[in-house]
Structure formats: C-alpha cells, structure tokens
Length: 357
Image 1: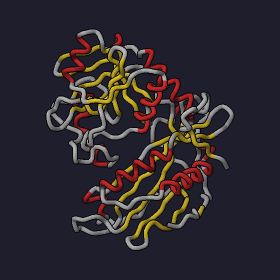
Image 2: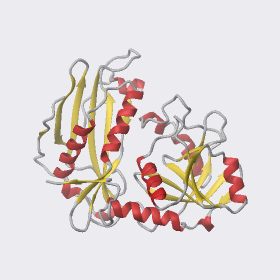
Image 3: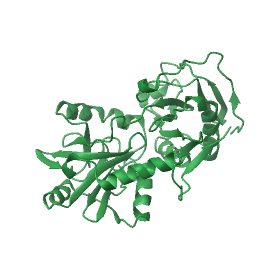
C-alpha cells in the first residue's frame, strides 16, 4: 500500500458553527480522508481532500448487501492547546476485526493512525477547546463495486470524516431511564454483534423508538437465544456495581468489544476494585436490586464516555438505582477518563497519542 498521503487543500473554508450550536454529528470540517481498494492492487491513492459529496453507482454493493463497517473516536484539545487522540490504534484493530467478519480487506493499522494524525493536524482549528467538547472522528469502509451478485465486493472506499461536537453533558451528568427489551434482539453469537457494522445499528432502531414511546431513553439488550442474559445498553457496553464488585457481561461473540469498556476495566482493577466478567441474567440483577446490593449502573462508549443509569424497567419490575442519582464510582470513572483524554491527568496507561503539526 502507498504510504504517502496526498493533500489537496480546500480553496473555500467553511464558516465554523457557534459552540452552543454544535450538537452531535451535524457539522463537518473542511477536509476528509479517502482511500480506495481494488482487488489485485490492494489499498491505493490515500488522499486528504476537501469535504464533498460522493459520486457512487446506484448498483454499488453497499446499498444492496450491506458491506459497511465504521469506527468512532475523538480528538481533544486541552487548555495548553495540545491535541490528543485516545487509543486510536485500538479503533483500527477493531476495524480490522469488523472487516474480516464482513469479508472486506484489512487495513494497515499503523498507516491509518498516521493518516488520521495528518488529517486531524490539518483540521486542528475545528477542535473546540471548551470543557467537554471535542472533535468526533468517523472512519468507515463501504463496498463500491456495481454488481447485484451476492458475494463480497471487489472494490471498496475507506473514508474518515470529522465533526466538532458539543459537550455530551451540557447540563450535568444525569442518569437515564432504560427499558429492558424482551421482544427484539440485537445480535446472536455467530452473527455480527461483535463487529461494528452499520446493519447492527439499523436493526436496533425499532426497539429504541418503542422504548422512547414508553418514556425511556434507551433499551437494555438481552441475549438472542434465551432472552435472559444481559448484553449491551443501547449502543454501549454496560456495568453494574453490586456490593464490592463491578459486574459486566463477558465478551461472548455477540457483544461489541468496546475500547471504553476495556479502559474502564483497567481503571477499576488499578483502583483495586474487583471486576467480574460473566454471564449476567436479568433475574440475577433484579435479585441484587431487591437485596439492596445493586448500587450503581452505567454504560460506556465513545460519545458519552460514561453514562449513568438510574431506572431499569424489566417486564414491569422497576429498578430504581441509587435514588436515580449518579453514583460516586460512576462519577470517579467519568472524571478520571475525561481528564486522561484531555491530558489533565497523568496517563499511566499510555492511552493518549499526541497530534503535532
């Protein structure tokens, strides 16, 4: 694969949105990264070019057979002006696992981190410096060959687009209400649940919409076979503080291997808090709640980092957690993780990667 990234700068820079109007994923920077794959040639023509719409054949296989994977990470600017990425190499490792699952070509992880750093450096002025704000990064790969044959595509396009995003908790970190989903399933072992593929998210939208109609922000997914073991919460991994331990569902082939999940486990164990990765039935969780042992619950993911859960509804059984207030461990995790991401606390794990000019 070619290692030299061609850079074509825009001749017309966009007006940047007001900081209080950023939202999440609605504004996009001046440039994007693109690279193409052709069977027999491999990945080629890596470029940073002005952000623009794509021209793609209506018969492109991504539209018909769903070969599409993506990643999500962020760039942070701290008070000293340093720009940091959080464990970017792990995102491209996971992208390769997703690509392999979808019969798509692997990428050179080291090259992709280098290309990403070049793109972020070019768009440095788009990174908000205000507390809690960041630059969201979306790498993705789609099948581009125009063909109706049911097989893997012979051509692909990889892109990275950037979006400045506001603070996730602009009004403070408030626990969310979660509906335990009993009708729909997110994934099954042997499927694509442990890959970050576009179809996983499309298939989850119906349950999410129905939960919102009932007054809940998200759903807690159960396993797709016995419909009793906890898997994920919304599009996040999930944790429960039960007594002196923290429980989280073990990776089982249908659960996404979250980077924030792994970071959370490392932090907890560094603090001497036992983390138990196991199959967790919703009955066991309800029993822990009834016994007064379920002290905190939270999701982990790139967008929110740590999202506290204050209310779980399982078949009409309501579990109010910590009086619907954010617990001390949840708060400590959020503050520590974000301080490391912004370079405001010592990074003893070597997670942060600095972007320089």
